[in-house]
Image (tube, rainbow, N blue to C red):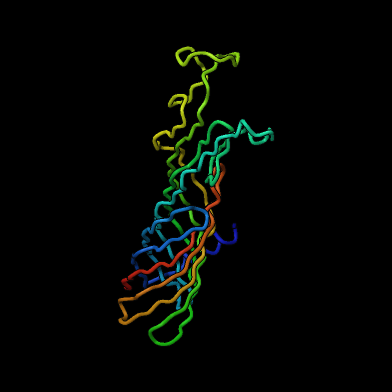
Length: 237
C-alpha cells in the first residue's frame, strides 16, 4: 500500500503536458446481489509517458438489491421439534431470528479512485492497457424487516389479549413487512482493477472499452463483488 502511494506521488512530481477526460456507461453485474442496475463512470487522466497514465475516476456502480426472503411457518403438528421453528429462506444480508428478519433491501455504491494505467500500442490507432487503482467508496443502504406472526403474550410469556400484550412486532401480531427505510452508510477503500482497449480514430478523440472488477469489503456490509464492461468516450488534449 505504501509503495503504491509512493509511486503515484513520484509520478505526480513529473511534468505532464497531455491528458484526457471522458465518461460513459458502466454495465455492471454482481453475483453478490439478486438485482444489479447499470451505473455511470467519469475518467480524468494525465499522460506521464507513452506507457503510463495517471488516472482518476468517479464511478457510480448503480443500485444493487436483494429479493425479499420467504417466510416458512413452523409445523407445530410435526413430531420433529426442529420443525416447530419459523424460518426465513432465500435471505440476502441481515440478522435473522425465529420471529424476524431485519436486513438490507438496496445498496447504492459510488466511489472516487486514483491509480495507474499501463499502456501498450497495438498499432497506430489502438492501445491495450491494464489499470490498478485505489477506490474510496461510499454505500448508502435501504433496510426493511419481516416479522413472523405471534400469539399475544405478556412479559411473563403468558397468553393475553392484544391490548395487554408486550410482544407485538412493529406492525402488530400478524405476518408483516415494514416499509423500506434509510439504513447505515458504509465507507471503505479497496483495490479496483481493469483492462481494456482504447481506439483513437482522431488524435483528440478516443473510444474506450474496459472490463473492471473489485470487491467491496466493509464491516457489517455484504461482501459485494462488482464487475462489468465500461464503455466511454474520451477527449484527449
